[in-house]
Image (cartoon, rainbow, N blue to C red):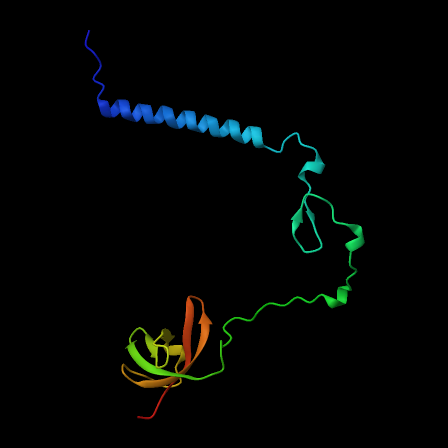
Length: 151
């Protein structure tokens, strides 16, 4: 009878598979040992102290503060507000009129800002001197209200 043709590569693959099975069984045992099943409710409760931090002990009732519901206010920060009302100046380093976007390099800080044709007050081209404002867009800072400067 002939011996089976088992290469060393097949042996290595089988060995790795056995090691993974053993590792998976060990992880399963650890999860079962650390699970919260069977624990009573007191062991699972978390409290919030007077500073808003989570704690395992109940807060001291003497430090309790009364708060009026009317004093609590909720608001959402509006999107795309200008970071600064200050007008910035720069040079158009790239502008593709076909696709409608480009980049402006700020004169003072040499930062480059994305701009879209929807954010232009007049058409621009490369190497034009422009003034603009900065807003936070979806993917970062963006130049808006872009205007050509007289030469």
